[in-house]
Image (tube, rainbow, N blue to C red):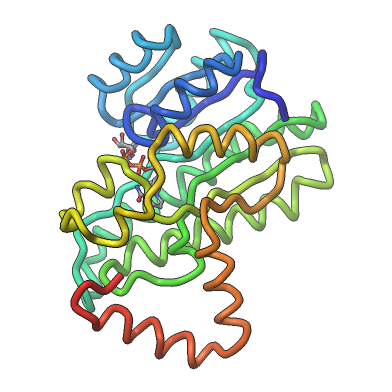
Length: 258
Ligand SMILES: NC(=O)c1ccc[n+]([C@@H]2O[C@H](COP(=O)([O-])OP(=O)(O)OC[C@H]3O[C@@H](n4cnc5c(N)ncnc54)[C@H](O)[C@@H]3O)[C@@H](O)[C@H]2O)c1
């Protein structure tokens, strides 16, 4: 899909990848709707790019509905809904975390994507066109032993995207899931990696990611990766699942494990 003239909602667009995409998609001619939990960031990004926006918790179906209504009122039918908002929650190696952390991770990484699909898919099916894009993580193909809620909810985000693709692609809706490795955003930087950590060295900037996503949306391929990591993990699992578990466990047991 070409973004020129399209109505595009980007969630989590107050910061990081979402903000960079809001800028880049606007430059590509899209009519972007900005939404984020952080009202000050929504205000800053909308003012910068001349877009409309709404602050709210995208894990709530009421916010999803309000954002969709703002988009329709301002620009007409929604062409692309990019479910991108995310939270890591505290890293707790080897810990199964309290239920509240699981509920919050699933609200933002899964239920928000589900509510968005419920909100926009019927009109997209009626038109035989539209795009559901989501951000999961390369963690959806592996696991991060330091963060159970993030790992498992990102697997579920990819699983939901697969379901949406299988169900809606035959009806003309494009579905893609972005499964990136580390990216140089406030989320990654808040994790406190030392400056020489390999995760930082291989991370793309938000601007590089936004360019990559514009190209990927152009191809409409389901799986969007920013490095070979995701495919390597999938291949390793298929080759020998037990060996993959042992190798992954050893990686996280190492001092700089990730
Ligand atoms: N940065 C990385 O290394 C990395 C790697 C893989 C995947 N991701 C994923 O990329 C996506 C974008 O993250 P980022 O790196 O740009 O981080 P970021 O922290 O810069 O941006 C995430 C944004 O989501 C917003 N948000 C969080 N919870 C929300 C909620 N309930 N309602 C509305 N907005 C909410 C935050 O306020 C923030 O502005 C996330 O889904 C993240 O999990 C990031």
